[in-house]
Length: 79
Image (cartoon, rainbow, N blue to C red):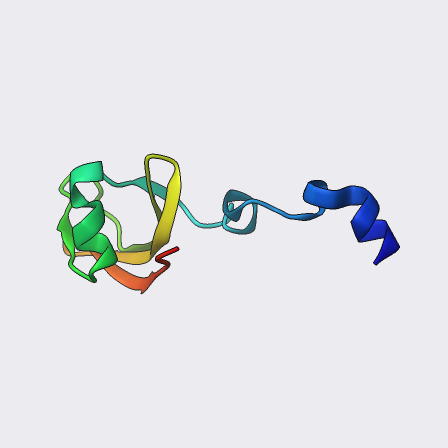
């Protein structure tokens, strides 16, 4: 505990650090509310089926799966 106390905020990793192994997707801010409510978003630029870490304006929103040109929320983190 003493070591953590000395490190203070340096001991806390940012979400980006935990999710660096997952491709990052920057969602249009206009679609943020829809994503947080569990709605999918069409994305024609991405062609592979994969798991994505979704951000909007540098804010982590959740994890999604890209499938058939749709970004579908798997886990939404509303903070």
